[in-house]
Image (cartoon, rainbow, N blue to C red):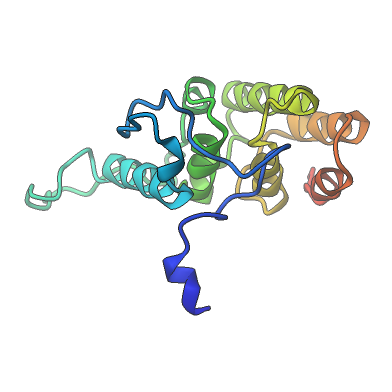
Length: 184
């Protein structure tokens, strides 16, 4: 337990061939040819900070607290969802994993938004199909997020994903995780 606060790698489930790492062309952190020096913890910290800034109305730390409440939270009037465009545009597996882990579970509940659910299903479907070729290394994180009900798709998409994973050329542990996805 003592080393949990010091952990900088092994935060995310690994991809097909190795642990998730940042691509050499990542533009938000200066890589300078040494992407291996950037840990999973560094990426998670950057993504978590980005999400926290958005939730605070994109105000910097030096700006005084606003008198009016920030409306980036779920309410009886609607949901605040993480736009699927984030997963479409940022296709690095580690960025997708950091978004899944850093988002609030309510920000990943696409059940009530058919269009957003379809877009997320499309991203996950591409990961399932790409897994055998070494593409889609965020698939374990997507499946785990769904199995723990942090990420939720519409019933139609969840059922189709479970069937797709059962029929796909995937390792048994991924099929086992997918078996835990609740499709109610």
